[in-house]
Image 1 (tube, rainbow, N blue to C red):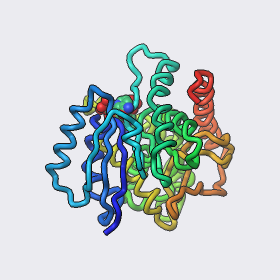
Image 2 (image 1 turned 120 degrees about the vertical axis):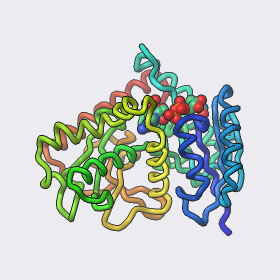
Image 3 (image 1 turned 90 degrees about the horizontal axis):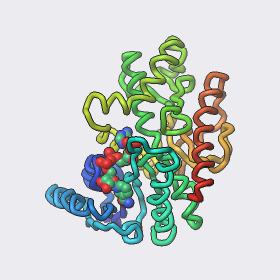
Length: 327
Ligand code: NDP
């Protein structure tokens, strides 16, 4: 049988962690033939809660779960890690300035990047979920100079999945018929879900909906979905965020289907005018365990302005963390 894959989950005792760990251990993320070892990283006060989650994982008797380690030390958590899911982050508190938020997250993602650099497996692949995810990924990546930069990614997949369902419901088709969705830019309210390249029945979605719906209903619905869920549930989305993290890693490791692509925030190579080095959402396929940016899409003026605005926000965040000495 296959050697186990070591998956490190940070913020393991949190809401997303709780929705994530059981599905990883059940084999949904890496497939039914791949055993996993789960390394759970938490801050010291949350270690006991992580132990409780581990007890429940034990009680599932998952055949693929080859071991669980719990620690508050990133250098232990990432030791030999093949996959890192960086979920734990510092949320924006009331009255918190952006610089304080970035500073607090620098204190989390700098040491994690350094630990990944020093102790992770050679094939380490990192997905950052904790917000501001793209910039947290940039901080971690910049402290891991020995790891190929493209192994650091941030999650656009929840926005991607939300966008697919909005389109499917609008056009009355199964979600599986919506292909080639792209979420460009930052995982924030400035993100741009692109219906000019998304397709239903082989035709662009933008040709099948009116422009007012696209601009005034669809885009804000996708971008503000997180707030709508907090309003309805009284708590943040957690299961759907965990599901998207699983989808992202599954696509990355096992590949994307022919004739389709997904949204992933990857280190920019300059494609589509996105400055090199920013970790921005793009259309991407994965083969052989590596992302490739889908090339050659025509970008009209409407899309150009939206992509540029979101990318500008990412560049501003990068400049802010640079001036704070975090990268
Ligand atoms: P959640 O598990 O609900 O969220 C964790 C992070 O994911 C937050 O930054 C959150 O951002 C982000 N996120 C991304 N997408 C979504 C989405 N669609 N919906 C909701 N959140 C999303 O937070 P909890 O507070 O329940 O748990 C966090 C855990 O992390 C705690 O147990 C804490 O102790 C731990 N932690 C661990 C650290 C470490 O291991 N070093 C460091 C910091 C925290 P947003 O805030 O914008 O909602």
